[in-house]
Each structure stands twice: as structure tokens, then as C-alpha cells.
Length: 479
Image 1: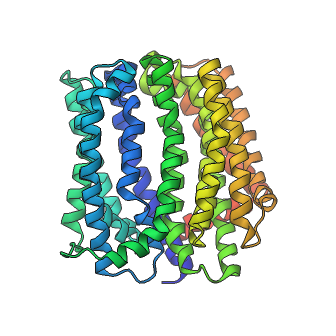
Image 2: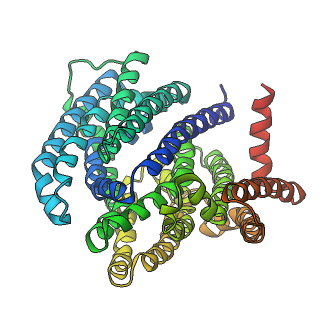
Image 3: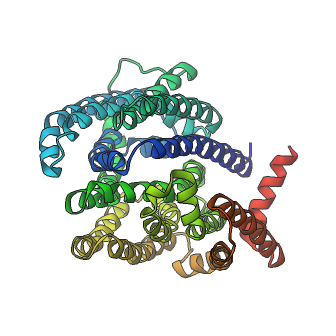
């Protein structure tokens, strides 16, 4: 299979995996939001940073180190497996014993037991990390799709059933734990890899020499992405955190899933051509242009339909989350661009530079956090937007420097896609204001009008990124 065929096949299956999986989780989340209250989502939001940071330690950058290494052995995989599992147990015990202090910090007594149970997900997730890594390294997203869809469906049914039967916030805990548990179970059932009874120090040192910098970078980035949950939970109210959490989850569906789709495919693919600068630059430009076209259309489109979408899907009780969602969409639309530029640094083996850039960018974020505490959540999100634009320039400058693809060239390549998406979003937003229908029909009309208008304008102006995506879609529909 050629590089182009691998890229197209991997992208399609990664797309199906992410959107089928997230689509199921999204539907389950909508149903749960209609049964539960913002308070219950806020309680889980308070724990997000502690679970996310612990998960970063469990992985410790080894996943990317294994994917990047060209000749991984059974010894490499087994060594990392045992490390992940042991660290998962260690961090679960840390969370278990510090859960009481965390509940006191937030002044929410329920959090102690919630965290002690939710922390079990670290161990469950660690059990399937190597199987998932091997599938990703082999660009095998077809099997990952089957695993994630079945796991998400079963966990969603369990959580919804518990919510209907009055288990409240525990249904959200069950949603996470059952998804991790089913995912690891099916990865063991449907893949052939099993660990050998071996832990090799040399293998560990080799992989950790690359992965340790990614670990520190990941911890910094994870803390940054989740610190706002902690700040809102501590200095505002659990209800406000619930509104923010749902808004963030809505905007994360397209932005982070697109990042996952293209990141999971581009990293192993680009790693195979890391020594051919010309081919690397050509492939990288194409990935960025096509990714950002889809991202801009989806994120700006969500800004335009936010109000009728929120009311239709999860009810008027969540109306205060609309403004958070709209502001967060502007922040989130840069997320895939950040991730792709950072992926390039990893492909080039520059985990040291990756770490230095993460430190610089997060130091710049400190004023945003302080502003949020002093002036409120909306001003804090606007500060996040300014910070993410600055961070993009830093990422793109260094990632593009070694392959001759500057920040200016990147902006030049993606600006036509942004202009098209912004124009369509403005028209769709105005359309939603002038038509007098129920919210569900306003949303449906906006989505149809936006889709048709996007295709018409892209065809008229022969947008390169659109033509490339169109070629991929029609070629595979033909097959």
C-alpha cells in the first residue's frame, strides 16, 4: 500500500472511529443532560484535572515513543505495558488517599468517594494502552472502530439506565469506568498481542529518553486545559462549572476529534518519511489545509447555531452555557492546528524543543487565569483566545522552520478556508434570527443552509483544500 493509500485509508477509518464513537457518547451525553442537572456535571468537572494529570503519568510519553520507533520489539511493548500498569496502580492509590483533601479544597463532601471510585479508570485504561498503540502504529483503525463503538454503546446504555433509576452523579462515574473497562476487555479479546514476562532496563531508558520530555509537556498541557475547571469550581459555583463543562464538551466534539483523527494518522505516516524533507513538507501542507477547512466549517458553524442547538438537544435549563460555547468555539478551532504543528516536532525527534515551547506558552497563560478569577468566566475565555493565537505562532514558527514551511505560509494556506467558513457562519447566524420557527426547525434549517452554501462557495472558488477532501470522499465512495 502506498503512502497516499495508507493516509487515505487511515484517515477514513480514524474518521469513522472518532465520529461513531464520539457520536454515541454525544447522544448518551445529551440524554444524561436531560435527566441530570448542571450540578452533577459540575461535580465530575471538579475531578477532571486530577484524573487527566494522573493519566498523563500512566502514559509518560511512551505511546508516542513506541509509534515513532521504527523497529519496536516484543521486549519494548512488554516493558512499557508493565510500566503503565504499575504506574496506574500507584496513581490510583495517590488519588484514593488524597481524595478527602480534594473534597475539602472544593468544600464538596461528595467528591471524596466519587474520586476514589472514578480513579479505578486509570488501571482499567492502562490494561489496553499497548494494544491500542500497536493498532495505531500499524494504521489499523478499523478494529479500533469496532472496539470503541461497542464500548461506547454499552457504557452509554449502563449510564442512561442508572440515571433513569435515580443514581444521579454516579451514572456519570459508571459511564467513564464502563467505557474504559469494555475498551480494554475488547482490545484483549480482539487483538493477538500479549505481554511477555520481561522488563528490559535498556529498552525503558531508550524509550523514556524520548518520552520523558513528552511526559512533562503533556503534564503542562493537561494542567492548562483542565485548570479552568479547577478555577471555576473553586472561585465560582458548581452550577457555573456545570454550564462551562457542557459547553466545553460540545466544542471539543469537533475540535478534539478532528485533532485525534488527523493526529493519529499523520504522526505514524509522517514518521515513516521523517528523513525526506520535500515529501514531508508536501504531505504536511496537505494535511493542514484539509484539516483546517473541516475545522473552521464545523467550529464557526457551531457558533452560528449554538442557541437553538443547546435548547433542542439538552433543554432550556442549559441556556446559560450558550455564550460559553460560542466563545470556546473560537478558542477550539485553533486546537487541531496546535496539535499538528506539535506533531511535526515529535516526528523530527525534537521532544526537547516540544517541552521548551510548552513551558513558554503556559507561562504566558498565567495572566489569563488571574484575569478569570478577577473578572469572570467570559473575560477568561477571551483571554484564552488571545493566548491560543500567540501559542499558534510559537508552535508554527519552530515546527515549520526545519522543513521550510513558515507561519506566514501556513496562514496563507488556511485563510481561504477561514474566510469561506466565517462568511457562511455569519449568514447562517442571521438566518437563525430572522426565521420564526421552533428551535429544532431553526437548527435544521441552519445546518442545511450552511452545508449547501459551503459546498456552492467552495465549488465556485475552486478551493484547493475542498477539492482534496472531495477527491478522497468520492474516490472511496466509488470503491
